[in-house]
Length: 409
Image (cartoon, rainbow, N blue to C red; front, top):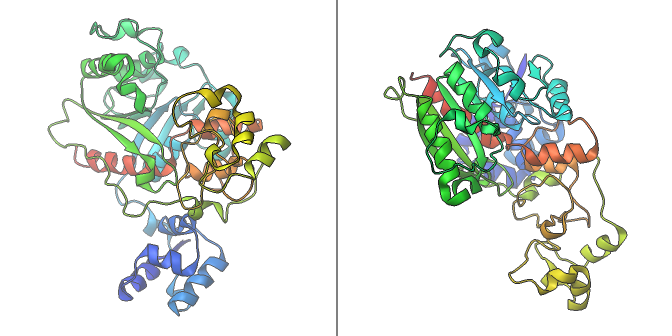
């Protein structure tokens, strides 16, 4: 049995009220609303707040439904993920109705995180170069063209031959080569390749051009777009270059459409105020006292000049706004891009209420990980795993559109 909030959504329609208005009137967080939207359990305190605002009973908000009624009607699609990290992309894809066949991740802590949260997943903690050289159809027990989706974001090193329009074998030695080898051998119906926005302009665009040339040679029609996670239910400004491929023999049957931005864009107030406590790395006493002088939403220009000058040292004489130095976020704005370290001088992200960095769980909230998703390894490793992840809600919205396309093929 599972919970469902269908009664609540019908009640909102009757009262001519939207979810954002309910959230604000009831004083509940965006995270609570998001969990309810996925038919996940929330605290009784949140339910009572909603009942008070709507002047209704608990049964008008939440009810019990058979699990079977909440499952996708159509069969699940299959996916393999490369460079899986801590599972942000994989979790979003899973939520969209995909069956995860396997994930490959070289980092032991990240692989342990995947296993801890999804014991049923086949997690391969291995250097991908030791896998891509195998007979992949035999290794994964798949026929060519049988896999629905290959996903992942290979870290892309420089291509010294970029612009020469060479083939796949000339990419040997780069991590992208191994992603392309999976495409070549398995010939999935679609692929999702995500990377940093900067890949578009690296080496005057020639690196990305080389990558897309190789994708085309593997037999794929592509769609690309830079998406900002803040547009897709994530309380963080984080841009990612998303490249989607459809195998050429299927490309005429359906086009891929990128997800439409959400009307409501969450801010830190939506995710921080009820965030569970977790471990984190504090500032030094010296840095903490300086940050106590910085107002929410402010940075080094908002404190006495002599103190800022002493703290910034040589950075004081640099050109540009240097807005990342002594940057304190506000509850009424999204997080800046979550980084792999909690405290870096040029890119500070101080908590809006307390003079400290965000905890691991707060960063995970900014990446839209569910609170029950646990991270393994040292604190520094957990920060790194969260910072490198694809925001779960962004991954989900993209995967929903991929699923829609696959249903037409």
